[in-house]
Image (tube, rainbow, N blue to C red; front, side, top):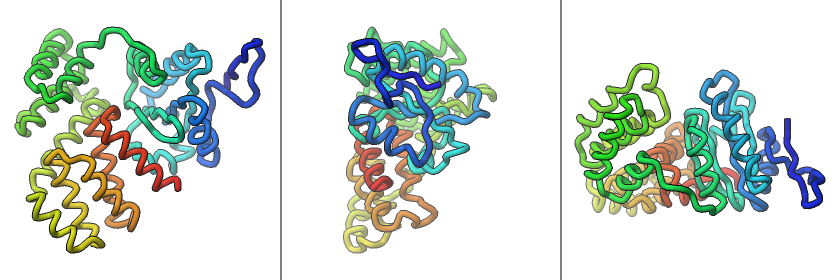
Length: 302
């Protein structure tokens, strides 16, 4: 049931639901246009998804607590697969935050209530409390302090052996240092019932991308080849992998987005799929992910 926003006089504001369902046809109105007025969270879910059933009530509670500052729009991907396909949703639950018509942040999996509240607080610009250990370790890893991150992730695993965020984080540390075999061994420690969890899946993508990028080749050579053949999508694709491996994410985005713009269907939509893997590996809060999702959305929804 949709929940309307209450105005200053306590009366419901017509057409301004806090929580609602949407369709492919109404996505532009309910999300893209509506996010010009206030942040909109999009919850991609399906009836068969157990974690979705855990997450959605917590999301609804957190959104309603904002008293209309944030809206929640839910989309059943079974009934409406087109939009989540364009957004690169590969596992659910998946939540995207939109502002001013563009995706700006997001997460996958059934996060605990405290992390959802922190996510929404950041979205609306509120100050949040002390970061959890996992968030501290993740921040250290993103800042390049791999040793500190590995120590924190390792300590968490000692206290909580089945903490998949810590296990995945430790695997990412090994990926970052180029120890791909150790990363693979770490991911293999995930129990069977959690091997497909969102953190493990994301770390596996990081490992897969690292293996793929290690064979990409020399950036300068590939850049020269791409410049000589600007209409060759394979040359642009190979360059994107090499650029990502060297840490040049924005230029890697340029190469893949140029393929999407010119020939999106090339090689079974390979450029868009590679972008999705980049976003998953870089993380939803990375500036390159935010920029890339915005630019990709502009192409897809133009």
